[in-house]
Length: 282
Image (cartoon, rainbow, N blue to C red):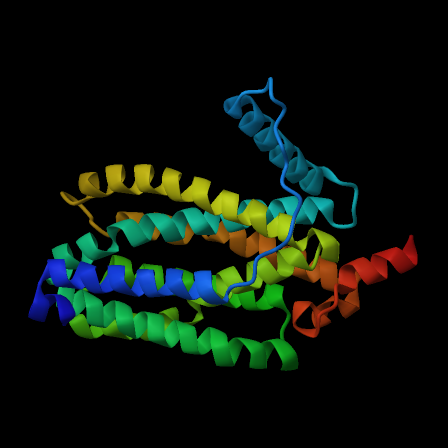
């Protein structure tokens, strides 16, 4: 609506203004973390110092992933599964506007309404429904499984979408989509020591960046080639690929809960029950 009324230039200026306000807010109100700056040796170049710091970071990531711990294999498999899901999410996000424009003649206004409705529903679900289900009946792994199951259904519907009514009905089905990333992050973090939480989320952020680059290359190159025979092919392939993370996270959650029943308390109660139980038993 803003773009239609004001044009692209004004729209981007508004976005720029909001980002500047966010930057000013951080500069004025965010508290600085005190640390001792690392002073490079006078005989060491900036490139060499940066390279050494990069190697140190990579080593830390490697130690987190290879450290002997209960459920180390499950941790690695779930990082792999989450990577597959993020790759699919990034790839489909790149082509979704073009797909709906091709199939249903969506312009940016209609697509904006569709995206806004989808984001609103998924945000409400993860803010209110997820915590309720988490506290009462289900674990993080189970909620991630539910999210993957409904995401597969939504992708199948996307592949065969025929009209706007069907498209907007998909917006309701995708309400569980954010359960996937939220469930994966919480489940993965419950498998490691509390002092390693920051490191594992850094690993996930690195994984997200890598999968985004790969997904952009794959989906944007393959999608145009499907237009001549079946534009929804990538949606079907993506739905099939989601069987991998679905199987991994559901099996992992069952195994962890079977061996450590108290893991269901998880992150929401500020405990790491997997680690607590493991330390009691070793």
